[in-house]
Length: 212
Image 1: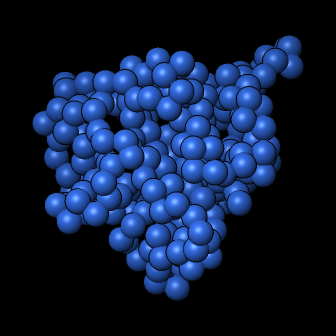
Image 2: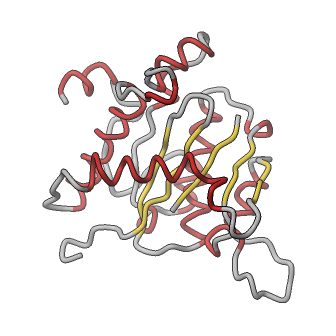
């Protein structure tokens, strides 16, 4: 915390390939959840994905549905973001966290393979290493529960015409990103090639489930 590293991770996992996207925040709020939804949705649209066909499944955390005790049935910022992109929001029943098992598995993997191993000297170094891990996870890491294939290998097999750069989305610090820039597909405060040249980076170093 002395270096001001973000406290929360927003993660999204696509079930057919196992690919994951994630971003970070200082506060666990619906505003940050909405920024993350916009960030991912705009990325998918740039790669030809029709977001109206997507179901985004979440639990009933306040960052997704707002204050559970609210008297007015008003949509949260996150829910409004999904509506903007015509994404269906699927909510799991209360006390059914097992339905989020895939993203919880991912969170455990990140904890073990990234946070327990790496050290960070600054926010910039943290985001850079997080980006490296994201590229490794989506392009190289084998998943034994998916026939020992990486998300990239599954993408090539199941969707041979897909642009492989769809798996490349740099993690961002949501709190410091202006909402309008996120919607337009521009990150703020963290400079990475976009889209990055995957081969150079790697040589040198249906339903979507979110978690935070």
